[in-house]
Amino acid sequence: MRALLVEDEPTLAAQVRAALEDAGLAVDHASDGAQAHVMGGTETYDVVVLDLGLPALDGLSVLKRWRAEGIGMPVLILTARDSWTDKVEGIDAGADDYLAKPFQMPELMARVRALIRRAHGFASSILEVGNLSLDTRRAQLLRDGRPVALTSHEYRVIAYLMHHPGKVVSQADLVEHIYAQDFDRDSNTIEVFIGRLRRKLGADRIETVRGLGYRLRED
Ligand code: CA
Image (cartoon, rainbow, N blue to C red; front, side):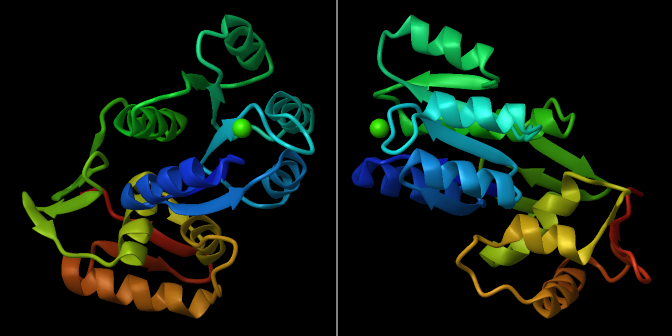
C-alpha cells in the first residue's frame, strides 16, 4: 500500500512519514498544495494524509480539485484544533476522515488503517486468507499463527495481495502500490519478491496467471 503525505511542517512531516513507513506503507511526501495536486493526479495512492494549511495551494482546494477530476482515493485531512468549519468544509469537499492538530500518532495511524481497509471492504484490522493472517496494526504476517520474517518490500507485496484475495493482480499494479515515487522501480524485482514469498509461505500460495499477473489463493 502506498500513501501520499501532504504536510509543510518538516518535523511533523518526518514523524508522520516514519509512522506510515513503520505501518508497512510506501510514502511520498509533498510540502505544498500545488505539488500535492499534481502527485495525486499522476501517481496511485491507497490513502492520503492532507494538511489544510499549505503554501501554494491550500489543502481544501487540493481536495476539491481532485474530487472534481474524479480522483477518489481515501483522504484524511489534518485540521486546525477546534475549527469545526474546517471539518465541515473538508467533509463536504470529499474528505473521508479528519483529525485535529495536535494529534497522537497512534490515533492517526488507526484512522489511516481504517480508511485503507474500508476502501477494500474489510471490517477488521486482521485480514485472514487461508492459513495466512495479516495483522495490519503490527504490520505483521502470520502463517499458521506464527510470524513470518519479511523485508519491507516483501511485506508490501503480500499486504497488497492480502487486500485482493482471489483476484489477479498485475505486476504493474504491484509496482504502483509498493514503491515510493523516488524509488528506482524495476518490475523484474517483483518476480524476485514473489519468489521469496513463495519460499516463505508455501510454493502454491501465490499463483502466476500467465500474461496477467499473480493471484493469492484463498483456500
Ligand atoms: Ca500546515
